[in-house]
Image (cartoon, rainbow, N blue to C red; front, side, top):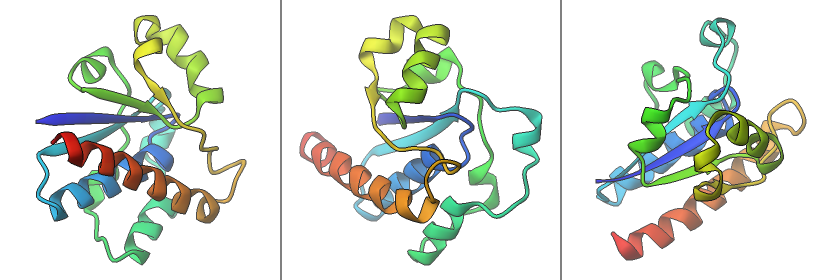
Length: 145
C-alpha cells in the first residue's frame, strides 16, 4: 500500500484536513493508498483542545462524517517518515526550518506546499485551496496506482 504523510505544525487544521479528505477520496475511488498526518509540535494543550475544528466543520459541510478519534493530533517522529512513500509539509516557510532542525536527512525528499495556518489566514479561505491541491495529488497518484 502506498502511504502519504501530511505534516503540519500542530496536526489540527491543515495536515488533518488534507489527510482526512485524502483518505475519504481514496476509499470512494477504491485506491490502495492511505494518508496519515502528524505535527511538529503537539503539546498536551493541543491534544486537549476542544474548541471547534475548522477542518472537521468543512469536512462535515462537504458531507464527509469523521470519527472523533480520527482528529486526535500525532507528534511527528522518524518512524512515521520512514513508513511513508511521500512526505508533504503544509507550509514551506514554516516547516522547512523545522524539518532541517528535526529531520535534516528528509529535507530534500519532502514536498512543501504553501498553506498558512489558521491564525494568519481564515480557514474557510485555506481549506478549499488544500482540497484542490489534494485533488491534484490524487489525480497524479491514480495514474501510478
